[in-house]
Length: 268
Image 1 (tube, rainbow, N blue to C red):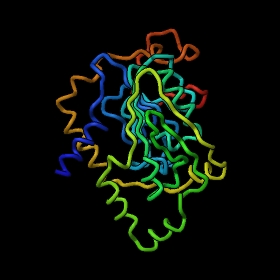
Image 2 (tube, rainbow, N blue to C red; image 1 turned 30 degrees about the vertical axis):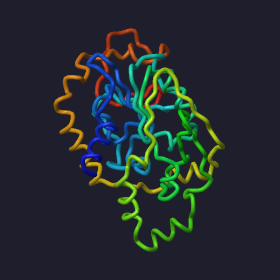
Image 3 (cartoon, rainbow, N blue to C red; image 1 turned 180 degrees about the vertical axis):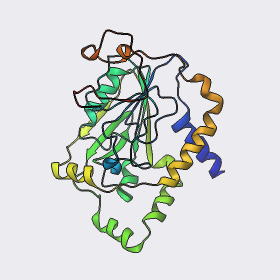
């Protein structure tokens, strides 16, 4: 029964998406596991040096057009996308409110997933800057002040060698370990405090929490579950000028390609 429930949860989180074949879908913070239905990807830290921000491959996966850009200032036109996915990103960013505002600006609806605060306080990741909880229909972000909620507990788990066992135990009820937030038209949120500069620097340089075997299993399961849904993926080409903000438009008929786009003047 637990296996069946786990598969249902995986399907709700990673497969089920209210987007038809004509919908344009954006994955914000796509990293090494872009959503199967995403047409366009955005990620600020795509190289292996930022592996601490990911849980699988060290470098981002460039399987579709990928914009290397800040999620708090996306290079896209207002309302360019029908749907956006932002999964396990907001707990990493310095200003989650700015990213949320951008999600609402560039897309009409979407899905947000973040670690749930209570679970994160039991087994935390030093690359996270926020504890997130759902207060009614409001996402509440409380700034962390240190890499771990309780350093003594963290040290004990490592000293006893049971950190992996604790992760497996929490993952066995994964639906309680995350906040799943689907939205349309707008997002209610509240920001409490701000992470200190030293914590931000530590989060960006800390070692990763890669669980490569788990990531490979997730990709294989996604492939199996999406085989009958491939017809729902957008099949026509996407024009560059149809998705980017007016300041970035070229005026030609260029179609997006599965390459990295940098619109801030840096080299591709």
